[in-house]
Length: 262
Ligand SMILES: [Zn+2]
Image: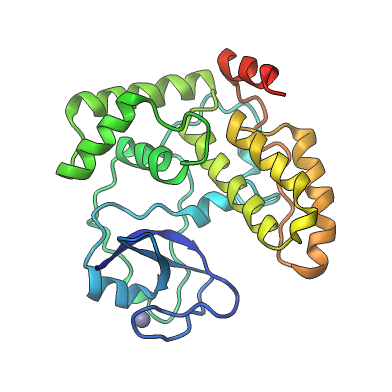
């Protein structure tokens, strides 16, 4: 029953402790580790490396994806226009904040293949999104998990999906799925900090995001308005960029399935 790497994520401002040495983690971002039964905990980078070695793949950095949909962050303004020129691999990728243990951050030798990361995001992180993986992608993931590598066919297929969706600026682009993950992060955080009897609106927004892989400008503006109340108790909740999904195209089947849902 060992621990394995799960992802890099924001840490709570207080009360985040390393599962291995019980030291408090003061950095804004840290490593989330997972046990085989699904239980999650935090770990300092130094302890993570000594207990688990280098991560097999570069860790999925949910925290940096969350920043992609926050208003007024560096690099966002330049991206708010048509995004067809954006290609996978262009995302800014902030590293762990310097903290007590970060001198032993995961080694840069960990392999980072765009197709592997894209597949892992859709399979591991987007589990609640409608149709997060196709049957072929699921098969590719099983193979990856078993052997540690993608088959050449699967890699070609994934790179094809990434290229076409970037050109089409569809919801399936690497750029867009990172924004979906980012927005999901903030909505879930808002839900956790909202009384159960007041969660309907946020739940409906989360539901829409899971079905449509995007939210409209108006919907994000409404979340921002809603967030004003939340900020009374949770001052760090950010203003979200209402153009996060500007110009992103949904495939016809998604629009139809939305219309027939009632
Ligand atoms: Zn530790």
